[in-house]
Image 1 (spheres, rainbow, N blue to C red):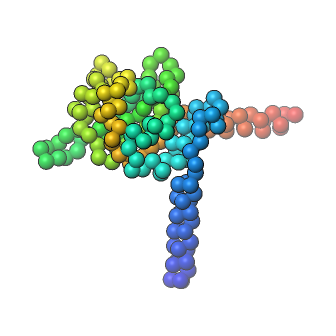
Image 2 (cartoon, rainbow, N blue to C red):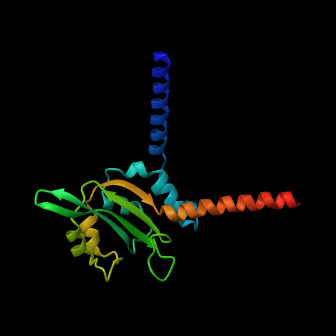
Image 3 (cartoon, helix red, strand yellow):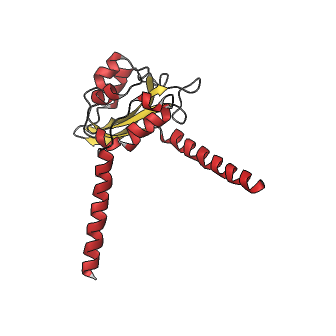
Length: 184
């Protein structure tokens, strides 16, 4: 019994390592590969290949991103204990490359989300970006780029809401096609 458990554990470990290795071996694909499908470009390069960006700087990632960053869709911050008490840290940013409505929307816009290994303080971010209650989605300026370009990244994704919406549309279309076939 113990031998079977060891073999199963070893097999599971090898499969897991193989999946991670395969993900790391996926080459970057240019936006021309996807023609006009920006969502597919983001999903492939920044979701499926996300482990390749861990430990890279924001500047390195933005050099690879073939779309200009226009504005900050949203910022993620949390209060963390520090030497001088509690401080708010900027743990991540959603960098918007395409706005789909009159106002920025974390549910609809095309963006990549970057989580930082060593987050700066929220006050530093506000100073560099002009973020405030009146300006929750600041434009992506040179000053903001200079502030975040050297931050190391611990996680990268693209907008999960629009990817999920796309999957739901595919499922609905498949169900509709099946329904048509049954009627015919």
